[in-house]
Image (cartoon, rainbow, N blue to C red; front, side):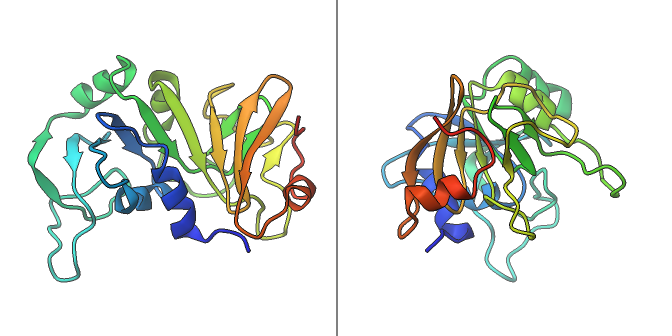
Length: 208
């Protein structure tokens, strides 16, 4: 069986290493904060000006003044700090954030990422994704392997406007984990119950 959203987030959580400063994108990546491995201490950064994000609040305990970049209510920690957007993006552009875990609409075999707009659709803005993929040390994408029509979202070449070219290091989908390598994508592991042949059949991009 393919992984569900929480299982994908849990697998992404395994990428976290002790002492990292990490930025989580909207969508499935926000769930990663619930799956930080035991014994691992990471500091979550939000580009709207927060360093040290806590988990999502319990129902009834929400504080409308505490939100992440995706406008979701979150909690603070004892060491949480706040600052303006200029300082936040200075951290990102200055290479202070070790990893970004982002969602995507498309990723291609060269590591190109498209995750900020679909032409003709109403969007709120590009957010911080372009700065993140250019400034962080490692970019991991968490996404469904196919769209609602069953078509691969791992392509030979992205068709949507790019967020960044050649920026993706690892892709975690509901079918498995793939790395961007020379010549295409390399299968790292498959989801429980998913065969390598099934993953290959669902992938348009070249698998080496």
